[in-house]
Image (cartoon, rainbow, N blue to C red; front, top):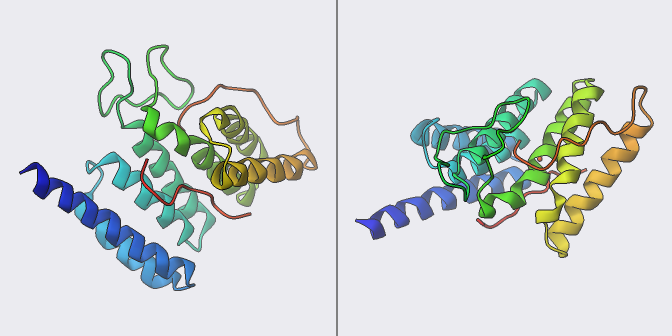
Length: 196
């Protein structure tokens, strides 16, 4: 039974990967259609990693910045649904939007996603001309970079954060924003190509 479930999960990631290939090849509409079909199958209660990955790439496939934001928020919510390491952590115990309970801690395998997830949200808010919200998520992205390795992916995410920080520094308003600490809550939209 466990082997059948693992094969099924691998099939979902394979199908997401196939849609991403279409997306990267420029066929946004077909990628959006395929990702939408998979989302309909796995739904809001499906595997958190599947939902996080799918929502992340579905955001990339959107033409409307508000739709992109909605999908990036779904990705962040899905990442927060993976239980952490502390006693009492369980799926569905999401941190509130305005802060995190002291006991909540993201699952170690998901920590690498948070810089990218918050970076993507910051970029979405820039597109929607909401620089203050962008600064909040950019600060969260920066605070979460400790989970990144010193490799091509990690360096790419850090470079994208620095580019957006420079862009926002030129915008009117206060500086980068408060440092809310690491946690869930996204140039190119970096995201690990392999599952953690």
